[in-house]
Image (tube, rainbow, N blue to C red; front, side, top):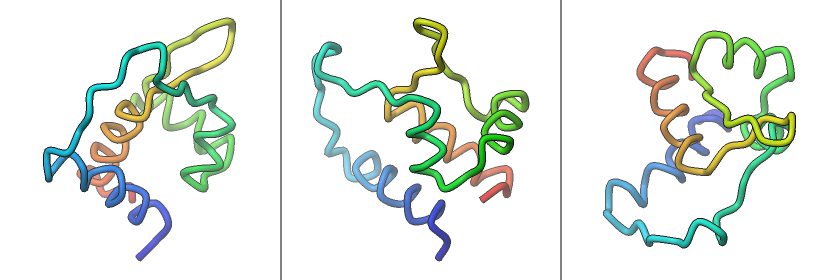
Length: 85
């Protein structure tokens, strides 16, 4: 099983088992594009390509891309469905 697939499984499992806990917005972690590339094990050029393709949809705050974890989960699921991972 590839690293991306393991990441996807770990992120999707709580959704399927309905163990999602509502966390106040101020307590949610915002991921930077660097953290996303490290976490997903992809290069910066692959990251930029995924943004252009619309597979990753960052929020732009203070000139940098940011993501909530559930945004990454959704992006990974779309990638899996399209056969990208």
